[in-house]
Each structure stands twice: as C-alpha cells, then as structure tokens.
Image: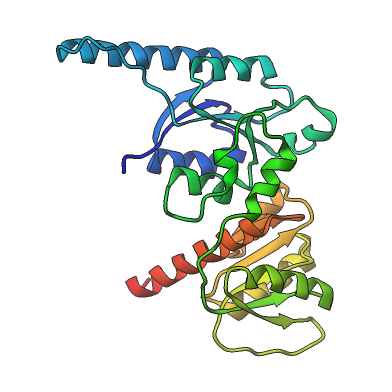
Length: 292
C-alpha cells in the first residue's frame, strides 16, 4: 500500500512538533508549506504538475493531486483563523483536516476560537491519534476518521471507545498510591487483554514476567524524577509509561531523558494507553529478537 500523502502546513519546525515531523518524513509522502497561502499554492502546483504529466502521456483527462491528510501545525493560539482552515478544505474537500496543536494551544478550547470540522490533536498525542490512520493496519482505526466534518468534539471522543483491540497477553505493573487508581488503570489494561499487578509505594512487590509498567502520580521535580528513574531501572527492559496531570514540554523531555517510553496527560483515552502499551512492548520485543 502506498504511503499516505500529507500536506503539513504551518510551524512544522517548532520543537513541539519535532517528533511528529520526523515520523512524517519517514513514513508519508510529505509536502511542506510554511503558511496557508503556501499550502494552497502547493496543492495548485502539484495539480498543475500532474496535469502536465498526464498530457505528456497522451491522456486527455485531468486529475487533481489531493493530500490524504492536511495537517495544520499550530504553535500558538490564533495562528490560523477558522476562515483560513476553511480555505484549505475548499481547495481539497476530500482531504481529512487535522489541527496539530502545540503546548501554548492546550487552553484554546476554553478561551480561544479553535477551528471546527477538524480532528484536533495535541502535540503529545500525535502517535496514537495519527499513526493508525497514516499507517493502516498498525492499530484498530477509531471511527473519528470516518465521521463527517460536522461531528463535534464530544462525538469524536465517544468514537474512540468503539475499536476492538486484539487480545494481548502479559502482566502490567501499575505504580499508584491508592487502590482506586490501580483499579481504574487495571480495567483499562484488561480492555487490551493484559493482566495487572499493583505496585503501591507502601508495599514491597516483586512480580515476575512484567512486560510493561504504568506509573501514576508523577511530578517532574527532583523527587519525582528520582522515582521515575527507580521505576525504569526496576522494570528494565520493559517499557515504562508515566501519567502526568499536565504535559509540559520541559517535563516531557526530562521524563524521556530518564528512559520513559511514553508520557500521557490525564485525563487520557483508554485507546491512547492501549496504543502505547502495544507499541512500546512490540519495540522492546523487536530489540530483543535483534539482540539490541
């Protein structure tokens, strides 16, 4: 299957989008546009180039090159107006529209004027939210990608509960201070076929066969990072996923520097947690088979 065609519009060089940009370059047919005007021109130039190629081949029909996805990378509130996003949609109505929002845009739903009719993805959510569509077959596809542009944010969120995950095996170590949190997280893990064991700070647990760990109640101050380091070392080479109340870029980089495999913001979608569990466990398994 050919790689998806992506038109990436906006501030794609911003550090919030560094990881997503690198993935797009490797796994998609990527076209770049620093502004909406550049994006419109790029689609027009691509259409013109394809038309010339068709004419050279002796074909009379004129086709138009359409991106599968238009990703608008927005690093600050108000960077793109709803009218500009609608111009992109009008230029390529069959393309799916994604708003990739940077760390400064996380409060835009409350105080700003975010565009409607788009799949809205925060900078730290891009992997489970975009890869299943851009890399078909890699994970169950949420219905949000099949919904009309008129679907609201609540309808988009509700659609994420429908995909049935393949039943996986393995034991997940859950580091949580209170039992209620453990039960909530273990229920999410059970949806993916995993078993779970509770690692409370007051209990000395030494379970064998752990394939991944999830740690809640994390802060990225000196004490919190020390705890993260201990969790990573305790379960190595199993991947560790941590849950933060709010993901700041600095905290994200500090956690990744301690060897954390993924960082999720609370509240999170069960779909996102299961995607990260499946992906990180597969990565560790592949490294083991390769002797890395």
